[in-house]
Image (cartoon, rainbow, N blue to C red; front, side, top):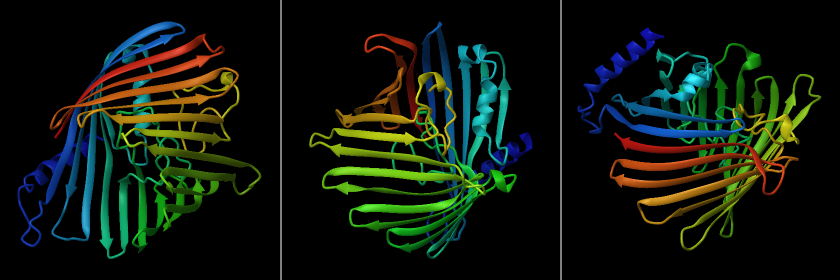
Length: 390
């Protein structure tokens, strides 16, 4: 793995020498480099038993786009390096393993440079793909982000890159090692086929999607296999007058037996007021979820296309508002109605300090209640993050 990273960084360094050069025909840089550096300080509090942890994270991302003197060909790569430090690493013996598991794909492009009692440095190449365009046909080969979802929090249609929305510090989301072919059949329609690269057919995801437009709505249908499950589904996104409406649904069938079925359904409405306030209301039904609080937990839940959430029914509402061009805020609440009600509350304030500098304050609260007033088994997280865009 060290040799792979060394070779990649050496190649990037050599390509950097070409950044200032321009092609004679297009006057376009051969290499474009973007990215950011973030530093986040966090405080986590658990009430049962009462514990606190103070942690820090330095997060660097570099994006490379290489344009040879050929309009049909492009290479993209993104390298993500994180420096974790603080009490959580010391208190959690499996912290290093959890970071590695989060990076696991077919090709091992992740490496821990340093792992000590309270410090972990990890580098992960989460994008590395070639894009070939031939008129209306496009091929993408390698580690890429494949986003088939419409809704904001839960995406039943997103078979390849379902993500944990509570991880607000990873806006780009994880990629997948895959081969994708796209045919643009019209101005707003396309047919897309994706084959994940995996060890064997039973653990491979392969699917076909068709997306088109009808009136004020974008529509899609998809079918294929998610590992050993046959699946079919669809989604929509559009407007009913001034009211936005999105939704997705997928049915999974355990094949070849095909005697077990599972349904995931996510839908949401959004409305913009004249003052710029965005309001959202959504619902999730995931048949694999539980109906009793003692059978599932929200913290540490491993999200995938079949298991989108630990609880069968969930309602959520969200608000976003910009006070000034530099200051904005957003808030969301998820409620899972069980015998012990589960709540997830997230609040975020964003302030642009300067042209390339941003400051964010985020709070995340996990609450469980067996009474309208009494709360127990609670966890609180508070994060202060500063970001510089390269």
